[in-house]
Length: 188
Image 1 (cartoon, rainbow, N blue to C red):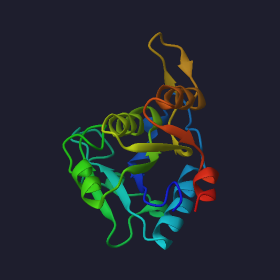
Image 2: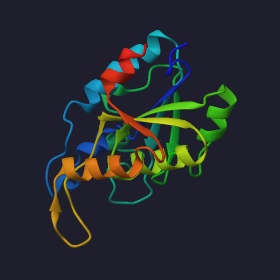
Image 3: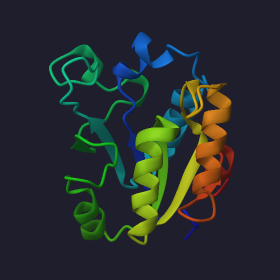
Image 4: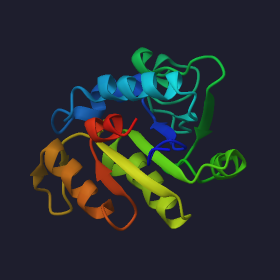
């Protein structure tokens, strides 16, 4: 069996809401091909009948595009769940808080996670930290997630690539192993 053979693919918050203009107020996103890369991983996971879990953010904030009942709450079409695939709804940034995600993974016997999604420095980072703390072997696919430009604590504008890179640096070798889509696909 390959390193990723029993791994579950987690797709975090890849919903239409991520295209809402307020996300890019400080500048554009990075990794414009992230959805295409997630779709590539989905093809392999589906073909090999590996576990796939779609995380959906159901915001309780009135002004959020992620609120249920609006178009923004729907998954982006290129990575939408197929019939029978697991969808876990969350209300916080971590997919493990207030959800049955951990129990579901344990019931499946999953010990390894391949994480993709948005945004790198928010829900992806929170989910990866928790996964690592819970003892899952966690891999974060750097080119299958993205974020947006953002001002740092001192008000200095950071590009989306800088914000993304800092999140990857915070996570790598402590909570997960950061790799790219090609590395995951090479391990079929």
